[in-house]
Image (cartoon, rainbow over all chains, first blue to last red):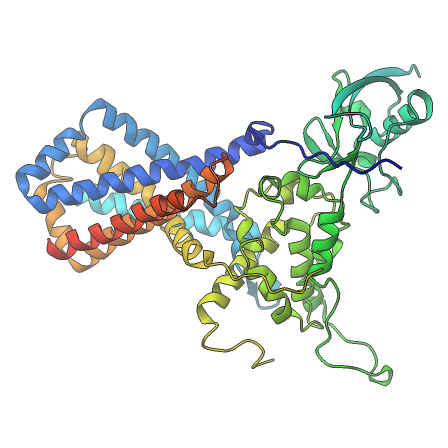
Length: 130
Length: 249
Length: 121
């Protein structure tokens, strides 16, 4: 009898092997833009604390095309994050019941999108309308 | 009807001779109803009797014949050669599991994990025969039913990169079955199973890739079992001092 | 099978912050990026959108400060938790304490700095 010699395959480059994994990594990479945007907001807050001149310098610097490109990409990343987050949220939530009927995952997803549109519209309305 | 032929590329590994696996291509005739499993059986019966793979029921019940078909985990009994024609098929043993020989993987790790979660009802009270059966409402049954559909085929382990990166992770099916028993109104074993859930190798090895639930042939949603238990584990972590486990129930 | 008790993970702390940040980021970041990153700097619809007076009044108000604190700190906890796990997935091993300290350290430092700036301002 030959000895057993189970072969373990390497994992290097695993995420390129399947379109599902590539999309997963794209989802995870939204975190880079969330982090950069938060740090950039924090920097703005710091400039705000120094005074009006510093704040205006910061605001003017944001008009640079590179910053506009960054914020456009960050906006796309934030939207992808929101979309994927809402879609997996039912998997992490305790099962909800209305009476004895289980609330469908799809319903939970749509309620979140509804809230998302209401909140976004309110924020944009308050910031740009007022 | 004219018979067509398709190329099947199979990952071969003979632990007695090979230092690593390599591909071998076979030409296999097929008709409209030839399953991938039947294609492999043709190879074994007609072309190379040494080809090793597992199978039993041929009807998506036993869970033995899971393999990677063109990189996707499938039960080969319910995949059909016609769907890959005129392309070819590349068949490999289930990803993330050690290859025993050819298309057969080593299932030891999963079987130990399955045993560790106590996959049986731990009764709330000892009952005698005269007490009759445990009764359950349809709503109570609904809470665990889909998780009880698991056939231990391991497609979800082949779909889970976290298990591939760290085989210490309990993994999708074992967690789905743990959740199945915890969610059963007749069971009182949650406190006993909770330490497994709370460990780094329990629910915390998961990042919700979600592919496990996509590939399950029985419609089980292991990703939800794992992630609902992240919530239970988090509650258990923060509130464990308020109500010591075992004091109630 | 050994009947040894598995060790309880501290991951719930980081996962709770990750989850809270993920929810908040999903609901408010797209609109916020549109306002502070695109409309504000470009002066659409008016140059007044991100004027110093307006922004400092917002940051000085209780609800405004609370909102900014939550958005910045929770976004950082959310993002660095994901980045930390992604680094492990790309082969930078999870066990490396440097990576862990670096990721969660930035989130903690950002949280403290945000709190300090909002409290001082």
